[in-house]
Length: 125
Image 1: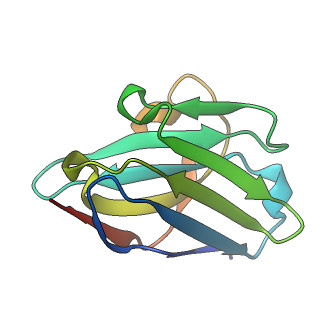
Image 2: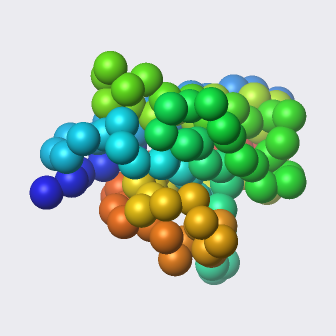
C-alpha cells in the first residue's frame, strides 16, 4: 500500500512563496517518477510539474516555468514543490502523484499510479 501525504499549503499574498512537501510511504519511493497536479475551484485537475526517479529530469506546465521548482529527496522519501512569485491564478488544491511512468500521457494524469489527498493553496491580492 502506497500512501502520499501532502503538507505545506496555506494562505499567501501574491508574490509570496510556499513549499509543498509530499511524504511517500509504502513501496520503494525511488522507483517512481513523481509529480504535482492542481485543481482550481470549478475546474479540472491539471498537470503542474514532474520529476524522474533520479531527479535528473524535470518537466513543467508553461504557466509555472521559472516560478516553481520540483525536487525530490529519495533518502527521505519526499518530493517537494517550491512555489515562488505566486499569482492569484495559482489558487488551487495541489495533489501529489506517483507515476507508473513518464510516458506520453503523464500530463493528463493517465500514467498516475497513486494520488495524495491534496493540500490547499490560496493566493490573496
